[in-house]
Length: 64
Image (spheres, rainbow, N blue to C red):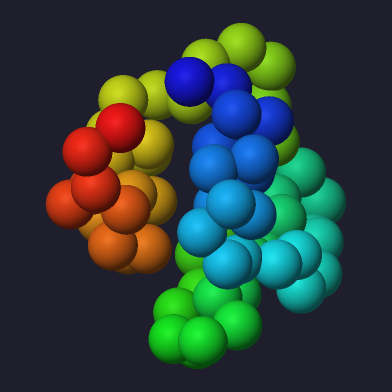
């Protein structure tokens, strides 16, 4: 999954872009207040990074 795909998924689940710093974007959920950082690099995100972001946001429990 690319960073763009992940950002699209986060936005579908109520996350909005709060700020950027370098090649990283910070997103916050409007209802839960959870925050996560998405690195903007070429190609697919490393598996561990993707799984950590999904776990932080609670999206790892969703059936996709």
